[in-house]
Length: 105
Picture 1 (cartoon, rainbow, N blue to C red):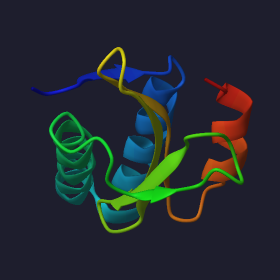
Picture 2: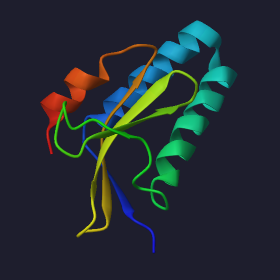
Picture 3: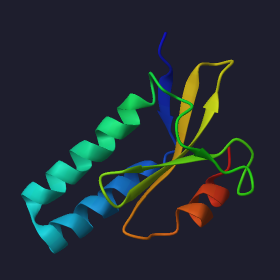
Picture 4: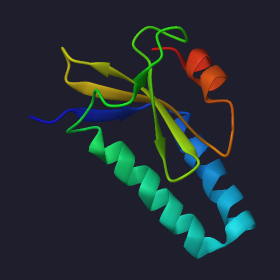
């Protein structure tokens, strides 16, 4: 049985900023490919919610996985509710740790 994916409201801004940056840097086709890779990685968490490295030193239960070559997805898993909570999506060295901490649980 798969988990439901929930997004912190600011993740939409994360993805929008990544899109704009990629379009400016590499063009719209490359941006679309990278975003597809990021979205596929997020979708895969519905079936494999416990993958990635646990980063309890940052926040209890926080996990991080790479996506789209230079992206990082930070998330927690609520097994009781069968939900994956996406806290932040960053790209190209952006500070996913600070974003994850500030967005809490």
